[in-house]
Length: 326
Image (cartoon, rainbow, N blue to C red; front, side, top):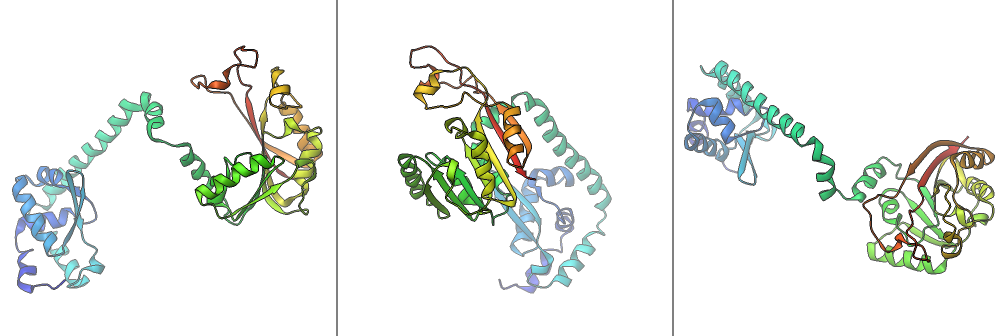
């Protein structure tokens, strides 16, 4: 941008413009806040701001029907940083400085109070409002962003690949393992649709994992243990392929009495208690570091709310057991 020296100096020759420039140093204010602080009319304030903006002293950020202003970065001010700082220092000498500061302090305090009062009034509905816009993937990615991106993850019982997009965004390599070729085919379709690049697929069983000792930094085993003959041996096999500092996550059903799951869902075990998981982990030289239990949300509806005889069912609670090698 080419500057006309006469226009540049004329832009800061007006006392009102010096007041505005000073108020905008180090903070962002809108026109209404500047009107209240200076006592100038809105058209006059807007006109002065346009002059300062056009000469590069301030920047404007439009947001909806509002415009926000603040001083430009002195280091990028084309006529020079020294000139910018000199003019700003001179602006602090205007007669209205003390009064402007006092009024602005009250204006900013009211801005903070409005925000505080808004959240105080909406707190009882906030969870309901969040459900309208927050997606579960956001929560998963919040945690995923804390994960070491160099991790190698084994997803046992990957099924149709529900967790693969999350793993792919945050770790170096994910091996998706399932004993069902049909499930792996569905997971492969998902991987291609989502454009996942760090996924490898393996048809295998948790009771005899086709990997060398210490291959993976983390293992996720979801809804698998209730299908295997020997859950303790399966946990030991998972531990074998973990690195020394590796971690394990096991998801399954808590103890329940839904006998129909044996025939309809091929369940070998009707859930596991915390004590059982503690025993499995201890035998495998794993430390149980967390045990989270969650039930099915009562507001969820779907076709799987009745057993094959037509009897209404309540799905068992689900646990997430986490652990690390001792």
